[in-house]
Length: 127
Image 1 (cartoon, rainbow, N blue to C red):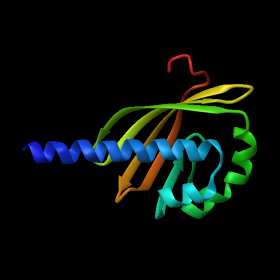
Image 2 (image 1 turned 90 degrees about the vertical axis):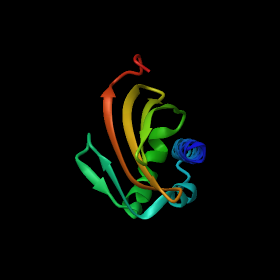
Image 3 (image 1 turned 180 degrees about the vertical axis):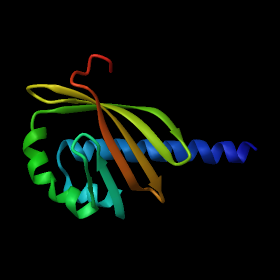
């Protein structure tokens, strides 16, 4: 039983480290790191925009994102992690506004296989 608890703790730590790498790469629009973190068949659901993107589509969107994220900060905390799915509360502090998001990440073999993003609030007051 202790071995199982250790394995679960290690998996959660690995997912936490992977998610931290994700936000660090997202903040600077690091296409290479983002590509390394995403599985080839990942689906990224942007609930507020009503779209689902493939890995290639998401990486292509980094051109627009890079301008939007210039001068911003991203703070995140893991709300829960179970069954290979981690839910994160993230505050995107843009120079002219901020946005509180709930984001989920499904992780398999140290790669993000699915992600969804939905706005919680147009301020980070609740963060």
